[in-house]
Length: 112
Length: 115
Image (tube, rainbow over all chains, first blue to last red; front, side, top):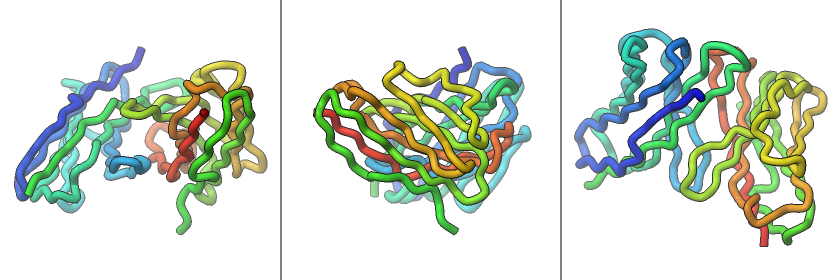
């Protein structure tokens, strides 16, 4: 059973701080990793993808991947109240039909 | 460009009725996925299509659920003899192909309520 684990939270951070969201996965051969943001009552929205070890930056967002530790994280710099949402980690497996496995998500609250 | 669209956005139906949910993927995307999300729960994979074929139907909860895709584009998810436990948001996603690195883009979802 391929699993993706996330702390459900909520993670509460003050406005302007760095929010750090973490995800671990069980399939060691996984190649593709995705972060989605889901506002309450809305569908998931792709934030970014990462495929190689290291950091990938896109605006205020940085994804970090460590395949040896089977760990992927998302950092949100200068957090804003509008960043308050649930963040889903998704991992495409190494073989088979490549159906992504989604974590249950971490709820982030950014308070003014 | 246009994203993934789904219709209807909301559907209320009586227990025992059949419902059809529609998904129109991003133009040119060959892979299409159906998920459902119950209140406060994670995403549950139902079925995916590559073109018009459904290589993986492993997530369909029962034989009351079926799906088809025609012309490599629009897909319909049909739930027969709906039950209250079918109440959920049904999400459709598409990706350029079903390859390992392809990004999925979600539609707005259909909220199904079975009374």
